[in-house]
Structures are given as structure tokens and as C-alpha cells.
Length: 247
Ligand code: F6R
Image (cartoon, rainbow, N blue to C red):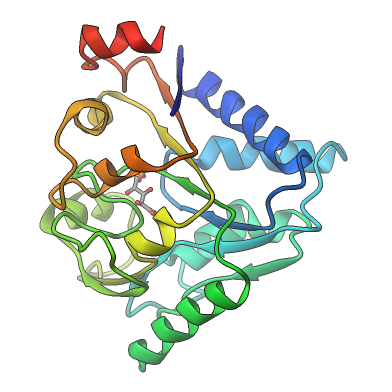
């Protein structure tokens, strides 16, 4: 595991862009899973700026959105489809863009198709991830099976309370469609991002707590190729013995 601790959110985002660009240039990645949320917003903005300057090329990359509320219309401003399209997918030259459709009434076939699509494409080469304050990755909430696949999940109140602040219209859906921990863990490489004090407990537990279903992100500690990019605030609770190993 590589861990980078940057001074602030701005530098964290620049570091993530730098690392991501290098990985893209290595030509070893094609299928990449992308998250929504506050954490990657500046990362996406910086990638789009680089693209507009002709300094990065996504023409060989297929983008896969990690999750989506359910039920949810694709073009609703609260949908993750809307977020990823407006922050990234529609602003760069990705070869292909895929996402879960939260308005398909047949969510079982929606999940099955997405799972099969990822398999048909040869699996994910990379997953970029944020960490939920309750330790979720994608929408794999605490208690998720470590071999869980693309599926419908019921969101925890902790997630609903936090996401309500980012949500514009009406009551927030209690359900979501998400890649499973299996699809995420099987990605050949992972880039995990966390910013701010509110993530500090989860970052500490991720690095030094038990690997458990109660903290889905903890399973990523077993991943053979993961880099973690966080800022100082997210790092404040990392124990000294771990910090000594990082530095
Ligand atoms: C969203 C997703 C979530 C977020 C996590 C952190 O697509 O996959 O797991 O990464 O909830 O969200 P932020 O970055 O808003 O703190």
C-alpha cells in the first residue's frame, strides 16, 4: 500500500490527478470505476482542465459509475448519473461511459446486466473511491458481504442523513444500486481518497482496525495494489506507530 498525506484538499486533488495521469500514460488501464461525492469534485475539475489543455487523453478509457440511488431518474439533478455526467463524463473524451440506471423498474435485471457488462469487459482495471463516514465504499454499507455483487441495497440512516445535505428535491431515496465489494476489490488497482476531519476516524480504522464487514473499506487493506491519498485533516487520528511506517 502506498499512502500519501497532502497538506490540504487542493494538494490532495493535485496529487490524485498526477498519480492518475501517470497510470493512464502507462496504458495499463482501460476500465475505470468512478465515484461521485464531494471528495473527487476538485479531482474531476482538474482532470477536465488538463483535458481542455490537451494534456490528458481518455480515448482508450471506459468509465463505469459506481453507484446510483434507487429509484432515480437519470436526468434528475440529484442522480449520480447527472453528477458524473456534469462533473466529468460529458466533459472529456471517454471512449465509453456506463452507469446503473436507477429508473429501471426491474432492478434485478439492471444489476445483473451491469455485473455481466463488467465481466464481459474483462473486469475493472482501476477503481477510484471515496470513503463514507460510516466506512462504506460505493454504497456497500456496513454489514455488506465481502463477496457482494452489483445489487440493490438499503441505505443506512447515517448515509441518508449525510447525503440529504447534498440532495435537492423531495425525500431522499432509501435504496441504491451499487457495484459490490467483489467488483471493487477485483479492480487491479485502487485509488482511495479521503479529505477532512470527518473522515479521520474511518482512515484510522482502515489502517489499523479489524478487517470486518462492519467497516467495508477495511477489506481494501488486503488489496495488492492500492494507493491512498488523504489530507492532513483526514490523517489526524492515524496512530504514531502507523505514521512512523508511512513516513
Ligand atoms: C459515491 C460513493 C460513495 C462516496 C462516499 C464519500 O458515488 O461511491 O461511497 O465516495 O460516500 O462521499 P463524499 O466524498 O461526499 O464524502
